[in-house]
Amino acid sequence: MAFTKPVLVTGAGGCIGSWVLARLVADDVDVVAFDLSDNKRRPALVMDEAALGRLRWLTGDIGDSDTVDRIVAENDIGAIIHLAALQVPFCRDDPGAGARANVVGSVNIFQAARQHGVGQLSYASSVAVRGIGDNPWLATLYGAFKNCNEDCAAVYWQDWQVPSVGIRPGTVYGVARDQGMTSLPTVAMLHAAAGQPYTVPFTGSVAFVYAAEAADAFIQAALAARDGAPVFDLNGVGATVDEALDVVRRLLPEAEVDSEGDALPFPADLSDEPLREYVGGYDVYTLEQGIEETVGRFGDLLERGLVSVG
Image (cartoon, rainbow, N blue to C red):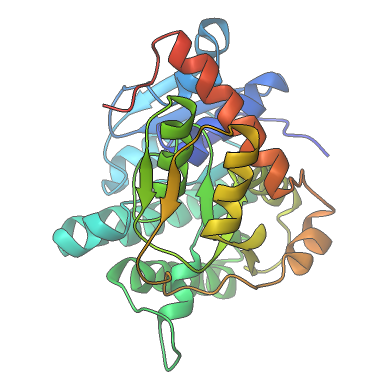
């Protein structure tokens, strides 16, 4: 199966968005990138100038329904990969802005898909949803907003037969990951590649999802979208922070990276098998493969002056 019409990627300037753009352009897919700004700093870390030049990059507010509707209509969008969101700390510090971006923005996407017959739609939920309700995990506004989106997706299928696939990624790591509370293992990898010390301020088990794996999962989910509005976990590799840093130290024996503090309050042992069965497979990386590629990419980007530890 392949995309036959343009694909809209929201949150295109973020980490997963950048990797999704790179994958789609490499596969000669017609891509419309949508973000609040025209800053292509992160996509430029995983795409060359020629690839970036093939994008239609549009800017606007995901929380504005007219803007979203117009973009879908005017660009003949046939599939949507919806990744636009504000992360945990931003939702905590400005709940109104978080709700507008994360909830209103998602409703706008579902509504545009309904109005224009978009039948291929995947969207980013989060493992933070697991914190909502009576359980040992941390409840956050970010998780509550994502939980609301899952409910909205279900109702859009129930009432108007808008199909969608929600994915709950764990801790995404890799080049271009530099925001949010779970970005710090990636920051440690960058520091190691730069020969600088770094301490990750949390320990314990983490669901490590390499950004390239997450990107392919969202792409395959959009291609696989059919009846219903299922939601799946994307756990990646469950490992402790120290185990991940051990991989970094094996690759870079001089690296001074360690961790301290409490464990993250999110599960790290969820199954990816239901998602793989639904989409028919996607690119999967071991922890060693993902970290080796990340450290290698950071080394190259540091030499070219495209990233720094400052």
